[in-house]
Length: 564
Ligand code: ARG
Image (spheres, rainbow, N blue to C red):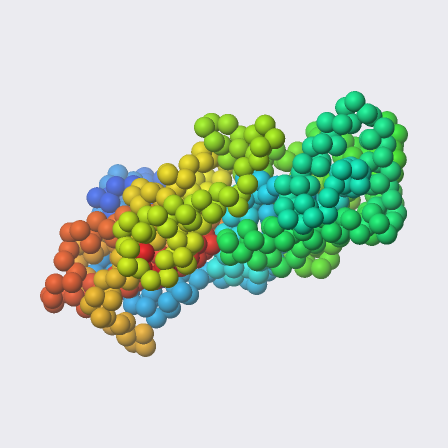
């Protein structure tokens, strides 16, 4: 149900099919002030086409606009303001939600095209950072949103599992490591070994040579080196999986950097063939002066390939295997230059699909205004953050609803949901101040607030023992009181579309906050549970809000407990 489109189609005919429906749709605005109607059409641009004063055009058109769905058409200056027939529109919306259920506001402009989403991508043997959390949460939401829009998302965890640091790590492990300790606490132990390596290397530079030596062995396929590397990788992944499980995030591929080891020669050959590779300071680079970028380093003097080379191989692989219509990289903004170079090199290689690659950057997570990754060697472990959030949620439940069954499950849904929502509610480029107290508040713009509103809607329906007629809902009787809430239902699809087109899940987060707020206000004003002529219709509206909140939360990767 798209009233903008309906209006655009009407105008198209009234304007003698001179301006396309799509263009007209673009021109239609939504007045900020509800007193000016639900839709507004400015006639300024038409003045040129029609060679007539815009006010006259507005007047003329307004007299001809007639439709069931439009209750009142008003002219103010060069604007045509249109008021929807609230009763009819509410009715249509509610009944549509009830028939379509979770498929309400499904869109199809993705046309089944594959979208690869490079997301999460933590580094092996290093702690899972806040940046990786943001990438996981944003990437997962973008996958769900693009799926809702008709795309086929492919979630790829481009693990940082290769590079010279593994030579250093093996060296450190061989010198000071203990298998038992690593098994018990892999990330902490491996990180400690890595840090120790750097400390010791300051006074004993020979260690660096050893590190390089071990990495060389690793690259040459030495059995012991490979075995240790595999072990570090497995142990790290085990830890990361616990976090993914908590957050309910799954991947379609774990092809990380190492996966491209045997695909690097081809990249180098292709670059040579296309005469793009030049020598500079004994290294091989692609010049990007025309693109106004620093050269992209492809191969070091010792022959070792680099991060960028792996990403070139990965891009080619993804195009060949998934034939993507879009390829997203959800990675912090500090890597912007890297992705500009990557896309530029592929463009130079003649691949027009390079234009379909999008770096989706995001800001930092701050604590007390400072970057929150590692604090003086002391690491903020993400898992601890999540467990703490779950603990606090549990505490809240214990206070507010001590008799709740499955408290553990609900605490997990609320605790994790709070962290995710806090991340997604702002434009992703903003830095976020990390505060558990803030995230877990039940009032204000928080995950628990939306979940709580959802649970409240469920409880109203339970109390009324009301079940929707799913086959042929014909709920009518909507008036002004319902409009604020019912009218918002029609904003769901546009919010999803904006989120998808701008790679910005906050559009959906803001929308469900608006809906939750409008609903709570309505609930405070109208006695839904009291018997009345309108009760059926009202309960149907509660049901619709319940469905849309649940679906909105789902699109952000957040579960909705029916009771909390
Ligand atoms: N592992 C990298 C890091 O932690 C992120 C990888 C992002 N993805 C990519 N294709 N480069 O910085």
